Image (tube, rainbow, N blue to C red; front, top):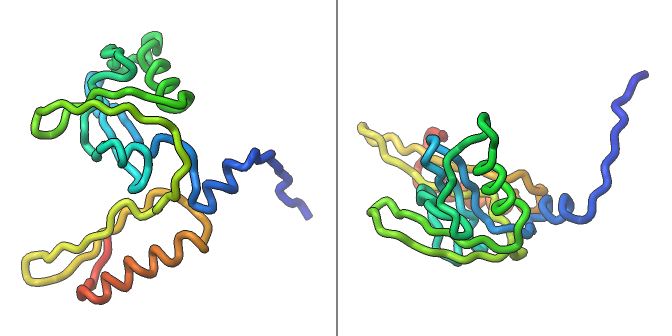
Length: 166
């Protein structure tokens, strides 16, 4: 029979990530508009979390560069700058705008930390009293890492009377 044949060489990063240990800044970013780049998530315990980054902060400067407009379809100068600073650097300096309009600066270095793949778990009580659980699972890691964290989150949901999950 025909079987899939593939292989890859792991320098240790894939094994580390599956075991919940990674070496990066610990946050995500995304353009929400041509001139609006934001922090999309921050892993607890990561260098970004220690620097005080939060989901939703707008990034107004990276490494003293304020030219961050999304330009992938027209030369990609800004896009390439952001990608290189974010993915291929060991340090990054940010100026961020918080939701209240105040600014925050952060200098972050790549470091190893343990990834909790659950970015958020909470409950909401809807009109009529129905309790709904909300869970954000961000990273695929090994069962040995994920299972105890998921078990704890779902046990908390049971204790709080959750009947639905989203």
